[in-house]
Image 1 (cartoon, rainbow, N blue to C red):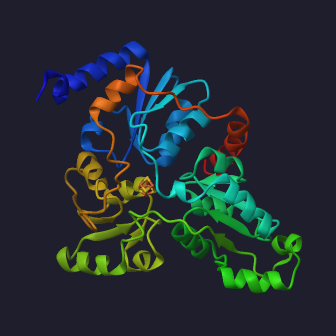
Image 2: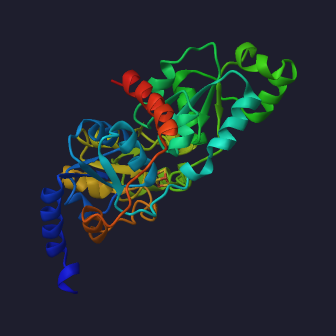
Length: 333
Ligand code: SF4
């Protein structure tokens, strides 16, 4: 190991660069433990967006994926924001584009568009309001019930939110039959089945977690409390004891001595760090997000040293995307 790649030397270099640049390091719960050790704040998307909004740092180094760094830039436009691993994208966020969203909205007529934060900035700009997995139910409950909702891009989160808010989930055949009786412009406002129209995206990490995994975990860890993420399919949610965002998982972990988590497997590292007295098992050990695992200490050092390009969002896009995020922040306070 060369001196420059020794973890202790890297941590010390990061510490020095951070003080010199007035930076703050924000890291998502799914990052590797070495990154936890240099982060100023750890959290889920909503917690990190709130931190990004209120920090007074000149530079925010984000350890996560691109849409999260974009969100930090949107809520704190005065700060320089860099994504420590610039290639860290999100497969779910890449399943939608602003052009495709505009075309779908035109097809559906008068709908309210709710964008999960796991979307690019230009998709947020075409949406009415944003949500995270922690506040999606609250956001949808705050919307009028006499209008359909286009929920993008996660079809599993859409299904969970539809059920939790008592709104019908409209599949394409129901949409076609309702539309056949109405003109395109009337559809959104006159359909008798106002509900949630899902985009067909998904998270490849959570979508593969199934009810059979929960049943196996119960056999292997009888007595453990099973919590799954709302990006999982409904059958997985129904088989579990609770459904929660990653911040909700930490809150629930305080109440149990042994838990199983149906989410990115690294979340157990976060629980072990926060609550060493709790025994934590991943629902499936191989459930890892390759993009979340890209960031290394070397990347953080390079980001602090100015070797990584800033996150830049065109002002017209940023203004409209910020409006959708601001509406979420108001609803979820
Ligand atoms: S865990 Fe899923 S939603 Fe989160 S960054 Fe990875 S691919 Fe995207």
